[in-house]
Image (cartoon, rainbow, N blue to C red):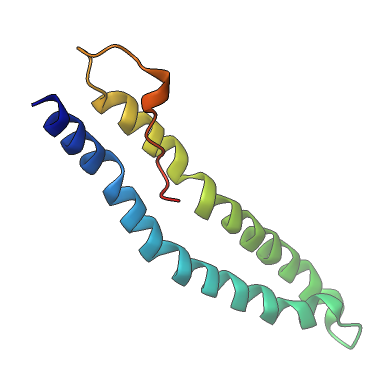
Length: 104
C-alpha cells in the first residue's frame, strides 16, 4: 500500500511537469532563437535609421535573453512547492529517497 501511495505521489508531481516542459521548451526556444537572430542585424547596423532602430531593438533583445532564463527557472519553484504540498506526512523523511523533479 505504501508503495502505491509513493507511485501516485510521484506521478502527480513529476510526470505532468516533465511532460509539460518537454512540450513547452522546444517551441519557446525556437521562437527566442529566431527573434534574437533577426535582431542581430538591427543591433549591429550603422546605416541610416539605425539611431532609431537600435534603441527599439535593445529591450527586445534583452527580453528574449530573459525569456531563456524563465523557460528553465520558472518550473522549478512550482515543482518544489507541489512536491512539498503532496509529500506524505506520515512517513519519516529519508534523505536517500529523494525524487528529482526533472528526468535524467
